Image (cartoon, rainbow, N blue to C red; front, side):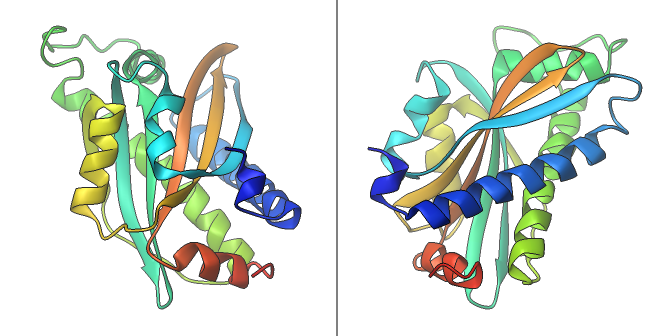
Length: 210
């Protein structure tokens, strides 16, 4: 189902603006971690999607993904921000940030070791924080964010964990498919913004399109 079935053209444009501001914030923050490496980032897909359709957007539902997620709220809006990477993309990004790191993980059981997990947590915090800052800028609201959590599992299982561990109850979310390029090597991920019940409507109201 197309996102236009859920939102207006004006709301779609606002989500694209949110994505572009978030990109700018993310590139600025990532530049310190990827020093002297050329970074580009684009968001080719911006839409509101039904919750049940999201796992399929990550590719093979049996493939592993790495995801960080954090809860953020203000008086009348509650959100969960999730940054999802296919496990191969996560490992590729880790290798670019820590080229001299030798993983101690057993590839068949632990695809990401403890140090790499810490790095992914930091990356996820940067990416989700960049979009949260964009939301604050566009709405004038101040969001309080909890520390992020990391999960490595199949996409549907990750989404189930996020829903189980947070108060997310809305059946629609904002999906941003992001393409990060480091030294012309493409790395694709996704940013999900999951609203509490009624928060998507409240968010658009604060954006002036409710």
